[in-house]
Length: 266
Length: 210
Image (tube, rainbow over all chains, first blue to last red):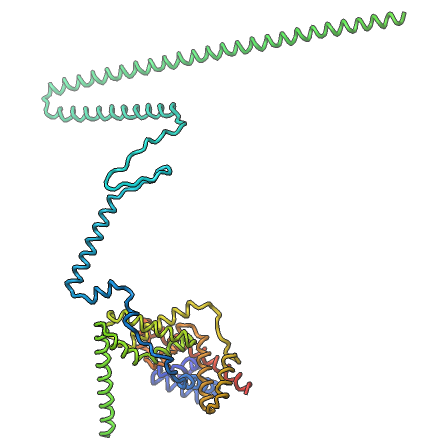
């Protein structure tokens, strides 16, 4: 195998450190015999390693002994380590019990910060504040919302009731004979017809009410329009009368002026 | 031949004795024996201090770091398991401490390598004290290497330190730094390349000055 200079230069430090296998070593040696620049590189590397190897250790400025006082960062740990196994277990158990007690005490401790007022209590529930309602509440919107909720609820309940009735009828149908079932069916049909009639009556009444309301609204609008028209007409008449009056005054002034001019000519 | 075998055996025996003694000191330290721990300090303070010195390049800071390393070791000796070597564990504490300290340093704080005040001062001091020429050269070489190492990234610097100054294997370094061996090698070769360039430049400057 022939080695190029780049690879040889990578292998030189590995060879000097003893990190190169036997065949690679041989290839490197073969390359170094023919390549003076790589030979120089090897010398430089060897020189660096020699310099590194020649560095001598300096003596310590003082001893670095450790004294027991330096180790006592935690007296509790020291005491624990010095004591026997039984004492250690007992201490740990006591510590855990204490932590549990503190935890329980903390869980009964109540704290509340509300509108700038801080309340503390231990074991008892905190007194409730009568919070004033905000000054502006839209009563109409609230009413409308409540009404809507009630309507939705009643509608839902009605549907649920109908479904329950249907289910019960269906269940009851199973245990009935043919005649009874016929009677049930007819009763149901009658009930349904009555319900439908009532619903129709209600819708008719609603429609009539809407028509009446629309008629009233129309009449009101008509009346208002007529009143507006009358007012406008009156105003126009007044303006016209004022105009006529002014015209007459102007004519009188003009005639007076004409008369004066006429006299002056004479 | 027998002499060689005898010396090898006695070396092995003394190593084993040393290891047993160290294990005994560790066990005693784990029981809270401060004297035993201080024996370990006495054994390892020089390599740890030199590691800190080469990493941090400041005598006071290195001393402070060494003290901190032994204090940390003393505090956590109970967690040390004898499965690994004590040296590996100590080097890991020192490496982590120095690397984190280096990272906390503001960026761009380097001493100039070529013709720096510190280098000239060192040279003048040695000359004034009438030191031997060889000592002078050695001191200057040490200084140049320490300065060149300062330009390495903390991760590269610690690998170079552990490999060339503490003479550890790649596997041991990987265990200390808790990184793969391939990463350790890559950091070492990049660090070496950088050192080579710096040292070459420094040699040229030194020659010109002389």
